[in-house]
Every structure is written in structure tokens, then in C-alpha cells.
Length: 89
Image (tube, rainbow, N blue to C red):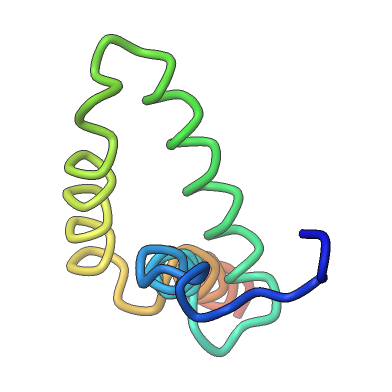
């Protein structure tokens, strides 16, 4: 912090994994997908950390991620775009 330098030891793989999780969950190839994914992941982390399941946050997020990837191939925003295109044709 004092030298305004972040070394590789400060950047753990968990942080880059969260960024990928947020992007895939929201939707790759969309502008708002990563923003929506970040909002969903951060709000889930906050809500789960305050619940009695606080120790299981990573496991629950992983399960939600797997379910969403299997259900929504193009992410949340991508699926919303598909529904909108389908209904307004």
C-alpha cells in the first residue's frame, strides 16, 4: 500500500477465478453480462456470509455456478436477450 505496488504474491488465484465466475455467470460477449454477474456473485457472498451457512459460501457458490452454466449456456444477460428477441419478433 505504501509503495503502491502489488506483487504476484498479493494476487491470489482466487481473485482471478472470481472474475471468470462473474463473467461466465453474467454472460460472455455482452457489455452488461460481467456487471450483472459481479452483482449476483457479490450479493450472494454477502447474503451467505451473514447466514448460518457462512462457512459453506464457496461450496454453495460453486454449486450455483455449475447449475447456472448447465442451465444458461449464454449467461444471465444472454438468456434475457434470447427471451426478448423471441417475444418481440
